[in-house]
Image 1: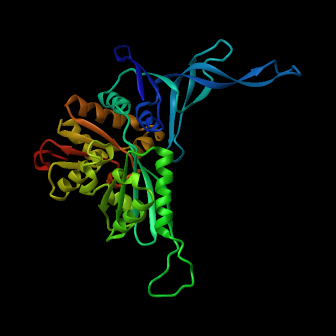
Image 2: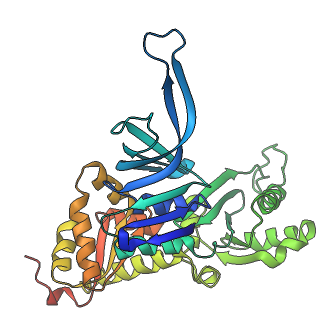
Image 3: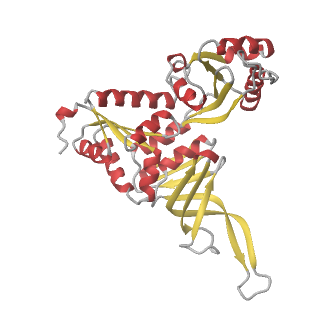
Length: 361
């Protein structure tokens, strides 16, 4: 993302979307009653109702809408911002409904009555230097899963079970060289994404065996590979991989690692009845007292409250936390850390002092 204009003093920020990762950040920043301006396609009716040659055409127009709904679909990277038109060409009626489809290359003006610190921080994080392109590969003897690391989690690319000769039984199946298929898939992803790092993980010795084969066929990839150990396979293996010390050094500045560390700290504090609380009522009471050091919220809870038109209560909590100098982190439920937080109601807080110092009546 590129921040083109910062005029928060008058409520306005203009950004240019430069990657699909930016859409997730915008889905957390843009909210109901914001004014959003963009170049967008609008259906225009030509001719009157009674004219034979009346019809509908599509054309690019610049519109400003007052936001009513924000929808982000993670699996197809689709962000749609819907609302009533407040500004635009003379032939487009004010107050009519329109949906802006945000994609790579879209320049978006966002106007708010008040910009909260965490909203601006979200845009700055999206605007910082692009994250490394990191491929995660988890395998065992005959199963493999591939994922690409994203700022908001990871995207599962593919997983499959190969056909290999069982050692104890003669199945009659021809060995289709499972390792060879995995290596070619790694090479394919390297060509497609121009990878910066490849994390290769497995239980036992499978990763070392694969590495030997890979060095023979694609020796140039060796310098990009970091080996790690995990004890499960598939999607759960990828989630486990992100907690391993071997790759925290590679990913030390990445959002997903920071989120895992925060949730792990939260779990430890909850287990010992220490400096943590969770649930909307409990977190709201802690925020009222200025006790929240770090507020954690899932994107799923945000979307749920927006749909139920109950987002105002959450916004109040965030304002209280910021006013007391606390931090706010929004976690995606696409990774295990976010899923754990969602299991706690989607909202939790690390506190400045223990629960014994806070009265939760």
